[in-house]
Structure formats: C-alpha cells, structure tokens
Length: 292
Ligand SMILES: Nc1ncnc2c1ncn2[C@@H]1O[C@H](COP(=O)(O)OP(=O)(O)O)[C@@H](O)[C@H]1O
Ligand SMILES: [Mg+2]
Image (cartoon, rainbow, N blue to C red; front, side, top):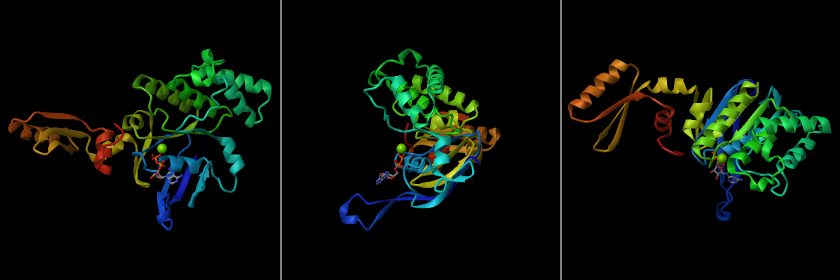
C-alpha cells in the first residue's frame, strides 16, 4: 500500500469562545488505503473534511489520533523521508506573486538540494510538460487561473515524488481548462506516480479516479470503483416527474427497468431510462446534491 490511514481523527477547538470546551470533529475516524499507482479520489461536499485529511497526510497538521503510513513508513516516526516522497498541490494558490514562473520553481527546487544543472533540466522539463514554457519569465501574478494551477502541479513534481496529493485541482476553473488538467493528471499517473485527489465535483471523480471514497461530515461512507458504486445501486436508472418532483428508481437489469418505465408511461408520464451515474450514487448515499 502506498498510503494507509488508520482511525484517523482530527478535532479543532471551537472558534466560539463561549463553547471552548467543545471540540469540533472535522475527521471522525477514517480508515482507508491507497494502492501504489492508483488515482484515488476523496469525494465529498464542502466541509466534509477533505482538506483536513490531506493536511494530515502531508504533515501540515497533526492528527488528533490515528496513524498514517506512506510507502510503509509511519509519518510521525520518519517525517523527513516521507516528505521527500510526496508532492502537494494545495487548494489555494500560494506562490510568491512578485517572482516569475521560473523563479518560483527555482526557489522550490533549492529546498530539495538539487544542484544547478539538475534544477535547470528538471524545471525546463516540467514547464514543458505542463505547457508553461512560454510564460517562464512572466510574473506569476499575470498568469490565468488555469496556468497557476498547472504551475502548482509542476512545482509539486520537482523532486520526483512517488505520491502526489491534489486538493480540489480544478476548483473555479472553467470546463475546458478542467478537462485539460484531467489530461495532465492522467499523464502523471501513467508515469507511475500514485495520485490522491479531493474534489466536490462528482464528474471529476468519475472521470479520473480508479476508486472513489465518498466522505460526508468527516465520515467515510464507502469506497468503490465508480462502476461498482453504480452497479450496487442498480446500473439502470429510470426517472420521471411525479407530484413531489423528479422521481428516480434503480434496477439491476434492463428488463426490470423497462417494465417499470412502461408502467409509468401508461399513466401518460414521460420517462427516461439511462445508465446510473456517480451523481445518483452520491445523492442516494449522502441525501444531498452538492457541488454541481
Ligand atoms: N483550522 C481549523 N479550525 C477550526 N475548524 C476547522 C479548521 N479547518 C477546518 N475546520 C472545519 O473542519 C471541517 C472540515 O473542513 P475541511 O477539511 O476544510 O473540509 P473540505 O475540504 O471537505 O471542504 C469544516 O467544518 C471546517 O469548518
Ligand atoms: Mg477543502
């Protein structure tokens, strides 16, 4: 296993001074493993605890309790070795905006004690890979949102990490740019890097991830491949309008789904029969429709 979490818990002190005795549980005991070479997704609405999990996995905040192993090493015992093996793309852009693209990369590369020739070669290669070679001498502040996100990814890869953590890699980007980032993440994974990403976009989890964990209110609801999630619910969805709004039913066989659709049609309703998708699963499991 590349990443192992066992009974991971994070509690924060209450921000309201009157309630200081209360602690807010952001992550409520999560046990989860990610295999080497996987693209693994943490899917959940805002406030589910995704960023807190990433911050614990990447040693930016201490768990309240529980253990984390990266590539078999307990991160609390061996933080230095672990840090060399991971790359982190944070949810919020945190460059030095006064510096150029190249200078930001250079600054980061020095943290990993790469010599000059190695730095130059690596930065050049990554900027080319992330399609940023043309803006290498531009100030970071002048980059578009999509370019900044690509630069965050390039920066996280400088030291050849084995695991890449991406926290909401396409948040606030428009759909075309989002798809471009997906392609880049797929390429990185093909290169042998294990990827753990968080998202509140169901479509993103479905498009990118081999396995997806659905997280709600700090709790792990289930982990499956997108396809297994859909098959467990029923691979065939029938939807129609009834008195309470849009109605859905899921079936394991096309025959059953067709029969149900025909029944509904007999009462003169228009019916849609379609493949079940991860959005259906998410709504069934969490009772909420978010992030869309
Ligand atoms: N530093 C903090 N102090 C207090 N509460 C926090 C802190 N960071 C996160 N939280 C709370 O923990 C919960 C989970 O937050 P977060 O991990 O950011 O969720 P997500 O990334 O899934 O949107 C939220 O209720 C949030 O308000
Ligand atoms: Mg977050």
